[in-house]
Amino acid sequence: MKHFTLFPVVASLLLVSSLHAATADAEKALQQSINEVLVVTEKSSGGPQLAEDIQPILDRAVSFEAMTRRAVGPGWRQFTRQEQEEATRLFSKLIIRTYSAKFTPGQQPDTQFLKPSSPGEGKVEIPTTVLYKGSRYAITYRLEDLGRWLVTDILAEGVSLVANYRAQFDALFKKGGAPAVIDSLKQSVARSS
Amino acid sequence: MRDKYMELGVGLFVLLGLAAVTYLTVKLGAGSLLSTDTYPLEARFANTGGLSKGSTVMIAGVTVGRVDGVRLDPSDYSAIVDMSIASSAHLPTDTMASIKTSGLIGDKFVALSPGAEESFLAPSSRILMTESALELESLIGKMAFGSVDGEAPQTAPEPAAKIEP
Picture (cartoon, helix red, strand yellow):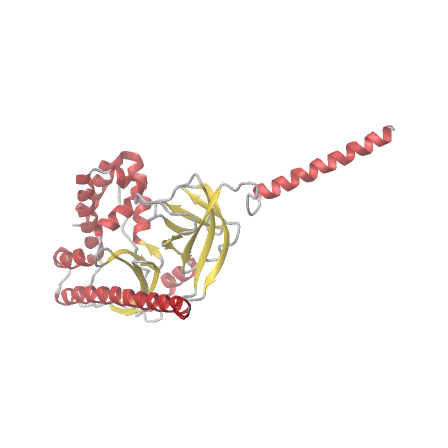
């Protein structure tokens, strides 16, 4: 009888400790990736070379496949395998080029990690505040356990990167299907180079 | 005898009027009590920005549900929004819920943006991808006055670039 009464207590303790372990692992993975990017930016003089240098780090830390799939939304199912790969490649390039272009050589961001939370199994949200060029911004990273902890969305001042692109891609897809989405991505990438 | 018919007629008219008012109150008010063809869902937000019971839930501008209530999760002080969604709206698991405002100073509503997953949200499950209400005042404040650490006024970072068609 005692075993039965103890079971819920033990189960909830195990659950709490596994949640703690998950958030700690996710936070560690994110911290490591940010540090790797900072090492590159410290020596970088900016420009397109910076985007090339940080691409391999971000490919390891971010699930661009999940990000692109979610950014495209329901239309993704109608993309062929080849179109999905092409869209993912272009989307990752666009994101990296857009943000690396905003980097000012000699200015390093200072990231402070706030208390992470786990909204669901295999998902962790890590809020941070970033001090860059004298201004403080609220950046929240959403990570998922997809074999390893990967970033799947970023919220800047509460605005989701995925939601922002979903609104744009959805309109494009309804207008011209997968080719319209890929064409606009190609044009945006060409403009960002 | 004639007076009796007159009184009966007036009584029936009043009853019909009351029934019409009740019907309209239920249909246009906080919830369609007559419709039970819905399923419950919840979503967690960092800030609901004044969303309240009875607010609409929309997909592509079409009303598909109502907010049943907003409560506080004491574990992390986030807000949990309970919603009733029309059974005809099957939502993928990566559906995103955002709190939007109709117009600049209009009512708050929940906008659902379906994702690409092939599995669907089960009744009583929680939408995990959410976007909280934007605090226009704080964003305007940052743009106008810069932040407390600032050397020079800065604008908020752009969350993402715009895709040109």
